[in-house]
Length: 185
Image 1 (cartoon, one colour):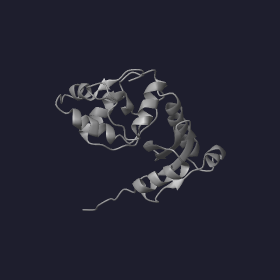
Image 2 (cartoon, one colour):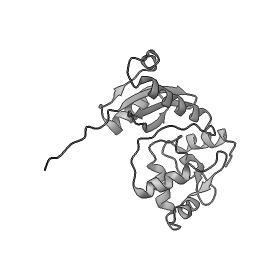
Image 3 (cartoon, helix red, strand yellow):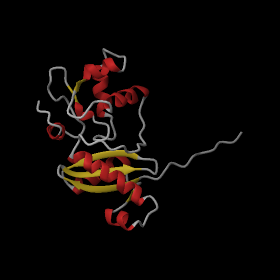
Image 4 (cartoon, helix red, strand yellow):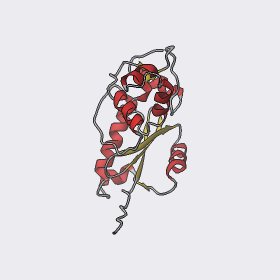
């Protein structure tokens, strides 16, 4: 018997400025792997380093524009989709994902992707839709584990009392994203 070890797909980092701060996008050749939003460029790099170490190849947007890397234009397109989503969360553009999650997390994320822009669901509503009506807290945890905020719109899920609840990137960012969709809580 032989064992074949598959080499993981290399990961690339692109940092881009948005009106809410610096977006860090980590992607493989297959799609988006992780997104964060931080107040500063340095903060974005620290967040990425804490999650992935220093095992990423950073692509500058200038290098992407010059097409100095075979994946550069594809990754730059994905980064532009993410930034446009930050600026206008109601705007939908498909983007390939390369994310991992449990079966439950994936079922929650599938429901989140169906929430129309300008609408919100309560955690308990999402729990009911995934067939686990008593799992509102687990839904919140699945939202918190969402590695691609903005693309999977976990900001559209709120607490049962109508308050914002939590958000992995901070409640202020959640409020800003909802406001950009015309929602005021």
